[in-house]
Image (tube, rainbow, N blue to C red; front, side, top):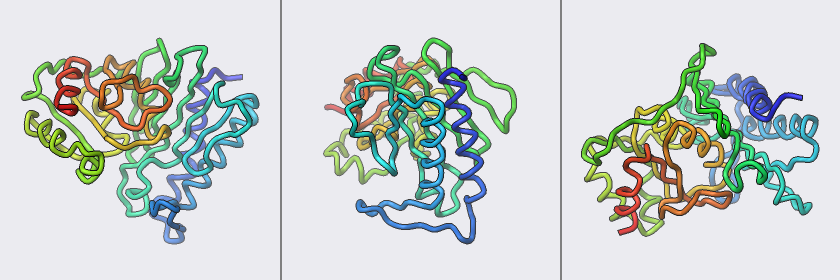
Amino acid sequence: MPDDLELAQSLADLADAISLPRFGAADLRVTAKPDLTPVSDADLAVETAIRECIARERPDDVVVGEEFGGASDGRADGRRWIVDPIDGTKNFVRGVPVWATLIALIDPDMDGDDAAVGVVSAPALARRWWAAAGRGAFTSFAGGPARTCRVSGVSRLDDASVSYSEPEEWLAAGRLAQFQALLGECWRTRAYGDFWSYMLVAEGAADIAAEPDLDLWDVAALVPIVVQAGGRLTAIDGQPSGGTVRSALATNGLLHSDVVTLLNA
């Protein structure tokens, strides 16, 4: 059997083969979930295919996914594959190419509550990022050769580029003033959003990314990529991200304590 990172890459290949042909399809079917966020037939098809493949290749592992939830058979403390079939569904259904499949493996015997393996595949951008504990972080463009990911060496906030999510989320989290203070301290601010903010930090193209309201499948795959690239990814209060994170702050490491101070003033 392939090792876990190889399997995660194969799962991403499978996801890309399903999602990319549905991007911009005239017959794409979109419905609203109970929380009023959209879900497309591509979201459902991708997660179904990934679950079926994991069931064949790793029958003892649990799958936790955005669309079909997690297992309730008492195995939640074992090896868990965390899947977001399409991170950025709002972009996907509007024809914006910034969306990706996120795949992570949490193995308590390897890395505790943090993911040991992470793959982020964005086929409409022709980009993929991946990492495994102790193996480094990498990216490729259009199926080309792998390039090592490395965070920036920026050490001052007034030289830093920050990427963020919707300001309304910071307002809902009761941290809008702190968030605005962070933006005011930084050199450049852009709302690239979703997975891409964190991948830009891992590549050294941005220095800070943060979101105040996330689910496990939104962030699990991002953690090993940022960390193996030399950065830090915690909750916005600076606590370890772990398996229950509901917010995320990624930096190049050099800026982390300054950003945590501002966001928690």
